[in-house]
Length: 395
Image (cartoon, rainbow, N blue to C red; front, side, top):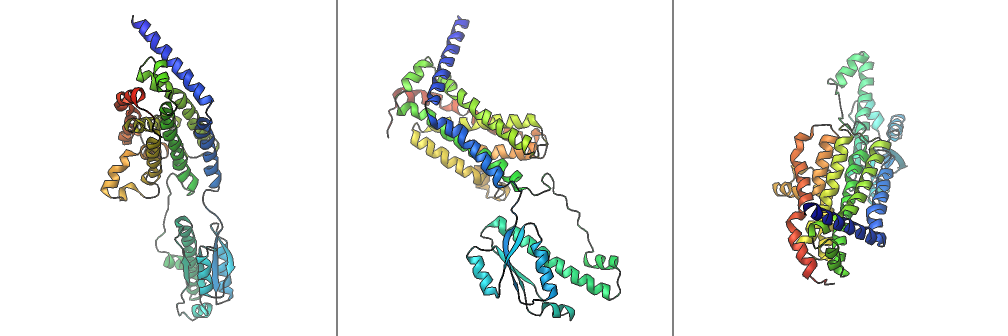
């Protein structure tokens, strides 16, 4: 009797899966959202930042001194990889207007008489102005112009000390009494693609998984196929949901693992944690995204409302993940709210155990959180069953 019942359940499951595959084959929405868009997003973000960080950001120079010293400073500033001097302006006013028009991100101001003031030890001032409208560009331009200011000051100081009879070692010791030994752990090249693509691409994939999950269940009501779906599954909601989600899960896992092979295998993004934890995290991410999509539809059995909630949750995830602004620096209420976003837990696992090779036991609670998201549909299965039987689609 038990074997016969198991055989019946397996037959219903396979029939439901075949039905779902046939629906997906005739609906281009699945192909576009589960395959085409994730591939395009992966190619877009990895090629957008293929240099690692922005280069040749346009800046200007206001050189009122026009001396050998000032021209040497300008040449050295232009030699930086990040910044590129694109224009020389006659006044601060014209340079400021260029910044306002978005032509440059900042400008370097060398006052008249700078070289003569240096020779007379009258401490001339070199100024630089930069815009923080674009934070990344502003920060990089600020770094280059500040470095150039410090190097120029040190070069003049070194020349003065050498002229007074100090040795080169004594001059360097006076100018830099403490030597900084800098170590950038895990990302020594400050590669923005390693930092951002590994969050943005999975986040966009999760967005599509949210939407497609809610859409696939919602269309059963919209097109009056709910009774057929349950009948194929033997009126067993567990078999119905499992048979519907398995084909989508296999496709999403294939795309997710293809993304990981491309990024970590071909682009050689750092992955000291190893492929085991990487593949395990990818599985958790796919299951948690689909679990949240099903849960959203079960709470609000309306395709329009559930997809709207999924879209909102996915967009908020990019702010609550902690890359743009650290979670620990947010208000306590927002820190608690961050636990409600699957992408946050995925990123913590990636950052801790994949990127830095710390043991997963250090962040086991985030693994548990993703498992909870994946199992959330269990809570709404009775309500979903009732909705498929009794609810009518409202446009």
